[in-house]
Each structure stands twice: as C-alpha cells, then as structure tokens.
View 1 (tube, rainbow over the protein chains, first blue to last red):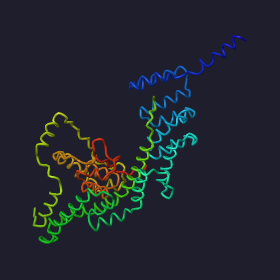
View 2 (tube, rainbow over the protein chains, first blue to last red):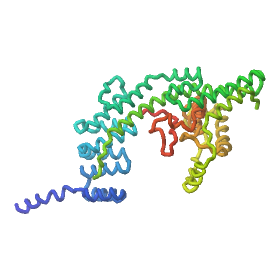
View 3 (cartoon, rainbow over the protein chains, first blue to last red):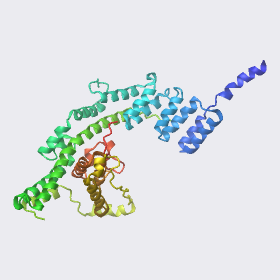
View 4 (tube, chains in turn blue, yellow):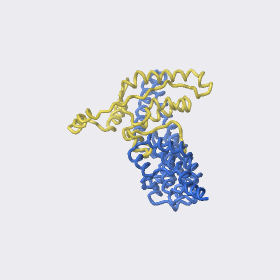
Length: 259
Length: 147
C-alpha cells in the first residue's frame, strides 16, 4: 500500500517533463539556434511530444521564420500557444504583412475566445478590405487615412487611365498616382512624336526613316496606354497592401515573446 | 539623324528636366569616401527568354524567336556596356523578358516599354514603402499578386 502511495507521488516527476525556460531564454538571447533546436529535440526523444514542448517549438519556428511550422506546432500544442494572447497578436500582425490568406488560415485556427482587441481589429481590417461597404468606424485616424486612400483608388477604373494616356501621354500616370514618372513619359512621347511628325513632313510617309520613327513612336505611345491600364490594377493592390501593412504595424505588440 | 528646330528644342527640354550633377567639392568628398565603402553588386544571371509555359502558337511564332534574339543581343552586348543604375529592382529588359514569358509578346513588350518610360531617379517616391527593397529600388514583379 505504502509503495503504491510513493509511486503515485513520484508519477508527476516521470510524466511531466518540463522545459527549462531559463535555459531556453539563455539560448535565445545568445543566438544559439542550433543548440536550441538540439535541446528541444533531445527532450522530445526522451519524453515524447507534449503541449509545452510544442509551445517552445512554435516559438523557435518564429525565430527561424518558418511560419507554416509555427502553425503546425501551435495546432499540436493543444491551445497552449493560443492562450498566449501576446503571441497570437504578434503572429497575426506578422502574417498580415505577408499575405491575407495566411492570416486567415492562422486566425481560423485560433478560437475567438483567445482573440485580443488588436487581433479582432486585424481580422476586421481584412474583412473591410474585401468588402468596402462594412463599417470602418473602428479604425484609428492614422489608419483611416490609409483606408480612405485605398478606397479612393479602388473606385478608379483602369480603362479611364488608358483613355487619359491616349489623350495626353502620361496623363494616366497622374490618374494612377505616379506623378514623378509623368514628366518622363510626356517628354519621351513628345520627343518621338515630333520626330515622327517632322520626318513625315519633310521626307514623306514612304521614306524608311519616317517608317522607323513612326514605329518607335507607336510602340511608346501604345505601351503608355496599355501600361497605364495595367498599372492601375497594380496600384489598387499596392494601396490595399499599404493599408494592411499599416494595420499590422499599428497593432503589432511591443512586448517581446521571450523575456 | 535629321533634327530640326522643334526636335532640338524637345531634346533640350528633356535634358534640362534632369538634375545636372556637376562635380563640386561636396561631390569630391563623397567620391573619396565611396572608395573605402564601395560594394560590388554582381549582376544577376540572366536567363535566355523561354516559352516553356506558353502555348504551341507562341512556340511556332517566328516573332518569338526574333524577340529572343533581340533580347539576347541587347543584354549580352549593349546593356553591359552602358553601366547604368536602374531605379527598379528588375531592369527594363529583364522585366520585358519576364513579361513576355508571362503575358505574351505584345503585352510583354508594352509593359517593358512602359517601365522604360516610368524610369526616373525619383520613381521610388511614387511607390509605397513596402514596395521598396533594402537597396532603395522599386520592387516590380510581373504578376499581380492580390494576396
């Protein structure tokens, strides 16, 4: 009876293999990633996989910038990673800088009861970008500026940029919000346009030099039209990413994940 | 090359639109300091334009092979002699090549020439911060990645 009782007392020492947090912190602050990995692997070899080990493995994956492995370990940690609200917010903002699909995948795993206010706002911002009709009142003034910028450009139409470039070469770039390259485009087109006009005027349309200069001008002129049309699509994506990047920067936690 | 008064005026307008970087004392000191901190950036390897991902019509189109030849000649024999500094991460010719591979000949050439027209020393100001790499060059991918 007594033996069984003592064995029962010793049970926690055999079953719960704790990761030495101070030692892990020492490894992290001295940039000993290989030793860190080896230490966690050794524990896994000796005691098998358990929740807190997966938690530390997930944190190691952050240091090694292995995002998919982080998601894998956080799933295996049985909500231990999710209960660290600071970590959830940190990773949400980090994933948001990379891609929306990755953030949605990550937040899909995290139960909403573990979401902080920042995480909630990150999710709302993603939904807001996908559907502009939603309420944007939760945004801070700093973020509202970037959101309004995104909405303004999102309403613009690529074919209008193309038409504007056809009327005055480079005008589509102004419409796309690229004023610095407008001047170059206008001057290049004006130069080749004048050259073509003069060549045709002086030498005739059948002259080889006129044909060459017409060809050069046509390529520049048409490329400006198609480029402006295509560039607006790119600008819309840029503005969207710019807004989401600002959201990620605003809500990222300043608390370190190792302390 | 035949140039009359209007063309000359256009050339002058184009020339004065750029900042004149004349040599002065300030620039001399920058120049002398740059010798110690000079970093050699190796030109990335340039692949030959390929149509592996394109349809059979592009593969049998003679214009495809003309564009391959022109790009090859320009990049191997002309571009290397110019030694110019691009404000974009991918140079115009490389961007055109990738665009041709991705979008086809006409759209690709148009996009290449569009970048050529957009290239100024201040092109970076037209782009958001996340679109600028560590060297201060504009990131210009061929595909639109809305994710």
